[in-house]
Image (cartoon, rainbow, N blue to C red; front, side):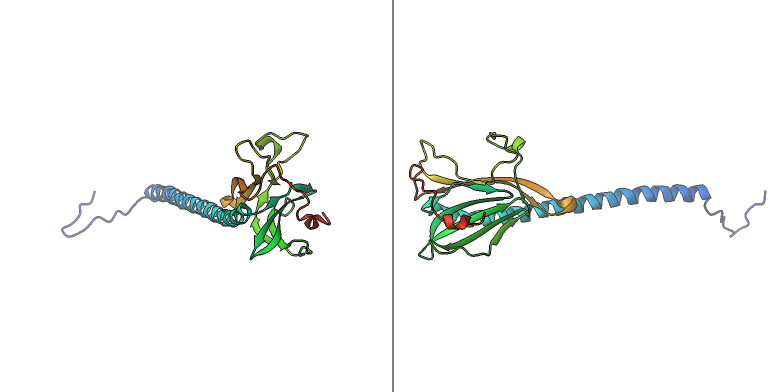
Length: 213
């Protein structure tokens, strides 16, 4: 075997096996890194979608609470096909007005319109929430009777011995985001009309809004 001379350096390089092992280790590290980054983005997108959906719901409910709190009457909810409606009477800008809420299960929209009492309702609606779907009967609280397939999204609960007020309940599922970031939330909110009594219900209020349903 030849010996290295003075000043001569060994230049053996690396073997093919060493190259393959090194590439395998780098591939594993890249997969782990990519998976971690993807998971972070998915989590961020889901949290962001949930936050945006909750913010939208809160804004809508604050508006409705201010109106319904001072309403002078709430009608019984009505469901016709894919449309569920309910009305309440309230003074808006010192004008006695009717407000009608509509949930359309076919389009997933919660909508609102208003008009002066005894006037003709407008044809246009304002969308308050999108991504709305009905609560299936198997998940509904309280349990449904009569073979209903889904809980009514808008209704007027009966009064109680301790709260003799008319109330309006919104009960549905809201969906926020899309794709992998999609998130669902059960919405169950009951508003109380403090200027009413449950024993003085008049379902003729705002009945002109139900024409054509």
